[in-house]
Length: 184
Image 1 (tube, rainbow, N blue to C red):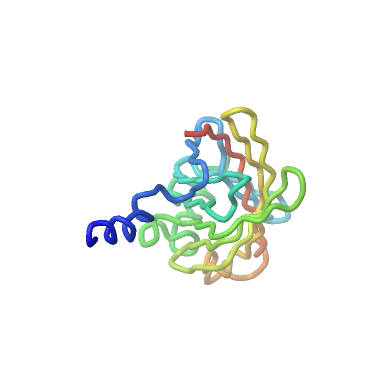
Image 2 (cartoon, rainbow, N blue to C red):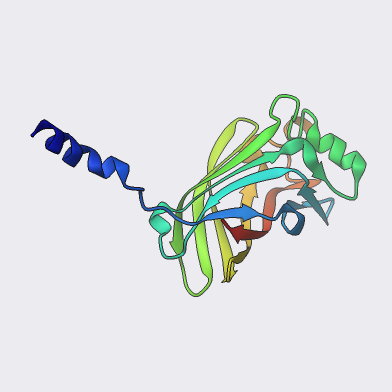
């Protein structure tokens, strides 16, 4: 009787939990970057090194999740002198805060291929809520996602001191994601 009772109580633990589909990001085809107005001109940069762990099934959003870790020292643009400043004390301060992290905690389907990821972003040790509206197209085992999120750089202490004003560098930053992945 004890064995039967133990088997009954343990059975739920032995069954695989429901879960969303896992994805393997194709980093060669994917881009993560940002744009900000700098001296009234757009300044665009990408992060050359980042890793994403994604479980997502449009039919099972309750179990979907995404975790992205960004190597802040991998920021690159066409303006090396600005890149050096961005990595420094008044920018990302990569010596003390080498990574940023986005953790999507929930997903909402809007219409068609449009979704919203809601989560938190941590930059320079500061964590703030972020929403990422995105469009997702899945063809066979390949997914393509594009999205943008709006941030205020000073919320994350990026651009302190002489760079804390809204000029020459705007407070508003647009983060861009263009991701291609294959279902595991």
